[in-house]
Amino acid sequence: MSQTMVSPVRVGRLPIIALGILALALGTLQTVVDPALPLLQRELGVSPGEGALVSNAVLVTGAAVAPVAGKLGDRYGGKRVLVRLMAVVAAGGLLASLAPNLPALLLGQVLQGAMVGALPLSFILVRKHLPAGESQLGIGLVMALFTGGAMVGTLIAGPVAEGLSWHWMFALPTIVIIAMTWAVGRWMPHDPPVESGYRIDWLGVVLLSGTLLAFMYGLVRLTGDDGLSPLAMGALGVLVAALATSWVAVERRVASPTVDLRMLARPEVWHACVLTLVITTGFGMVSFLVPQLLGTPGDGYGFGASTTDIGLFLLPGAIAGAVSDSVGGVMARRFGLRTVVVVGAVVTAATMIALLTLHTAEWQLVLAKALAAIGTGVGTTALLTSAAGAVETKDTGIATSLLVVTRVTGVALGVQLAAVILDAGADSTTGMPTESAFVTGFAVAGLVAAGSLLVVRVLKKGAQA
Image (cartoon, rainbow, N blue to C red; front, top):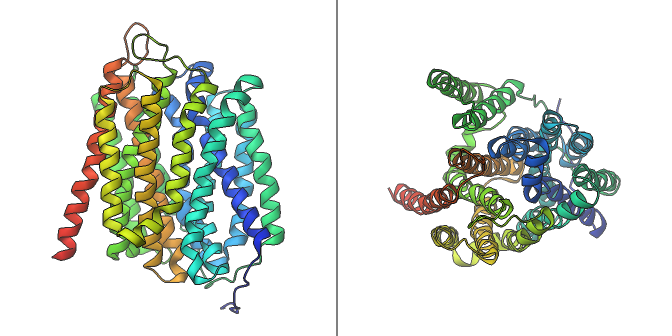
């Protein structure tokens, strides 16, 4: 039974402001862990590889939730789904704020991962309630505010964790999320659904989540002190391949797949996904390596920075990321998508190469993080806005959720790869990563960034053919 379609209501400033503050608070909640990760590792007694799971729990859940949220938003209305999704995020934030140990914190992070679904839902609301000429700017603004939350997160993480406790890092943003969710629910007009009859592909959600979790677990155990045997690692690899293959098979057959793989038939979409994955993998490595090096006790290469100091050192990178996210779409329209992506990749690769030798002063790491954020931000946002503009309005949630899934998967992969490298290069006596481990990490990140240039060239030749 079809639903009656009505013209969308144009909104004023108040609901858009509430939506923006909500995005800001979500970005804050997602990023408070970054500067505090060395502190959490010490207080919880875990290795860098295990500590990386705290960050990646959000990303893995987000990769599974984002496409479901986008499709539900297209079918039933972005506002309705957004409000319900934020209830899950709030529950996760409250659990993390009360967590007594690592398992409880990880569960809280898993629930918080639902916040990634807020991005495609916000894109739906922006595109439905803003004039056509302002929709791309609105998408960039939402991305910028979400990324801008990283500025708040990096600023409050240290003072709050050291002045109160790390539990309050999660509690404060959660309170704002609850308030702004109420405001959006009260002030934002209901957006009309596109169609009815959509059913959630729960099997696809389970298989996608299982694939990502098994893969991340394998990376953590690969080089750990109590690592799995070669036979067990081989069995885990077979499990990951089986889960991934099953997921693809399910997505191709069900009527309403979690991720509409048919959307990948559009060159603009699958090209954007491939490039986004490569770009964000390199950036994920940088995002993990820089705070780890800053927090490593100084012994010729570390700095032993406190959580507050790490937050201040990461702030310029957060600002650069917010600005680059907001202008990526505009730059792609003015200079061309390929030019923006290539320049961003060159900047990131050159920065990582420089870090092979220039990592003996804090300002070098601060500058490197900022340059990597700029290169990644303009490239991925340009790819996202290009893909969103290439599909019909009714498919905005599906297309953008594909890019969001790819983006968070790439970052998660990069974080875990960097953690594996540090674990593998840890000193046998102290358990701390050696300088050579950090150098290896920066080298791999540079190779990944340079790899995006090769991808651009290959995709261009394929398009011409």
